[in-house]
Image 1 (cartoon, each protein chain N blue to C red):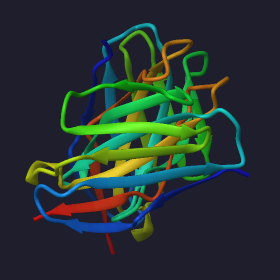
Image 2: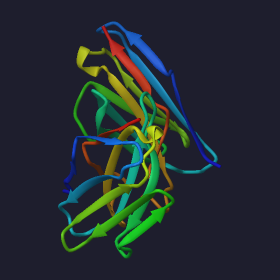
Image 3: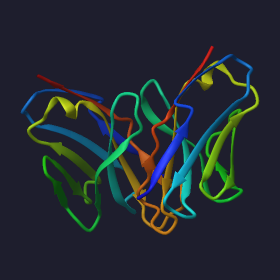
Length: 113
Length: 114
């Protein structure tokens, strides 16, 4: 069966510091991968998605970036965090052939102070 | 693009009663409609989904109905229990579309009162 991992689970960072959140998927090959942000416990905002290694599509212009260095690894980064970057970050995956259902990871709660 | 509206934003029911959450979508070409349940501090979990060639689908106490003509779909939870308390999200997707095309509603906070 497939599993999706995210770490860290919780992160507190000062404004202006860098960020690196990691997501990995097990039990499947060539998945579609997604990063979402959820603010105030509601509303899923799609940030990035990837259909393959090195292929990143950005949905919302901001100071975040994403990378996919390996087939089942998706990384969300920032060079300088802003207060507004605080939120709950969710990674999701979907089968590349059957893209309809997305499965979410446990999330990373980020607090920027 | 697709737009999904979800109502109500909050819903409180007594334990044992039924709960109904409704969503409308704008793109008539959408044909896949999943529902997710998100417990506090966790990622959303898929609980049921329906495709446009089906009008209703049931899984124990949960059911989803779809009205393609009116472009709306609903989640029905019967015999609610305290563990049903969570935020529920609906979504819509265009079959065969690009990888990004899953549009979410804004969520419903369901509280089941004991």
